[in-house]
Structure formats: structure tokens, C-alpha cells
Image 1 (tube, rainbow, N blue to C red):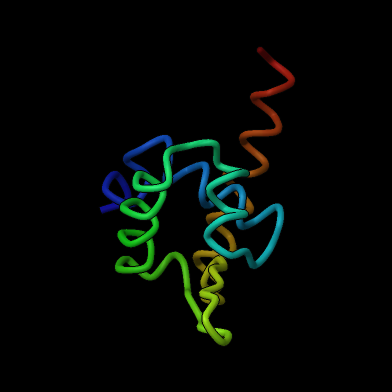
Image 2 (image 1 turned 90 degrees about the vertical axis):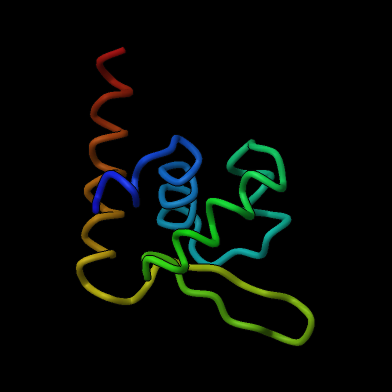
Length: 90
């Protein structure tokens, strides 16, 4: 199942972005992830379906964050640490 959750570069970027920057709206998320708007929407919907990301509505704006479940918090933190470690090696 983890291969489905992490099976795309965009999903990993979404998780890392939300972990590093906290709760974000769609426009900010698309900008930080650097992928096409539609691609981010599709991948984000899957992350929400899997329970990795939570969404909440504030007025007309929808905000996204890493789910509060400790397993997903740890997953995001581990990905961020691995990403930082790998960045020093390349």
C-alpha cells in the first residue's frame, strides 16, 4: 500500500511541502510543489483518500495539512530527514 501512497514524485513533494510549511491553501501548495495545478489536485485528492492529508474549509478557502495521526506525522518527518540527508550527498 505504501507504494500507492508514495508512488509519485508529486505526492512526495506535497507531503514534504506540508511538513515543512504547515497548513496551506491550494494556490500556495501548487506554487511550492512546482507542478501543474491539475496534477497537484489529483495527487492531493489521493493523499486525502489515504488519510495522509487532511483538509478543512475556512470560508471559501480550503486548507490542507499532514494528518494529525502520529503514523503520518512520523512518515512526513522521516521523508523530510531522508530528503535533507540525500541533498547533502548529491
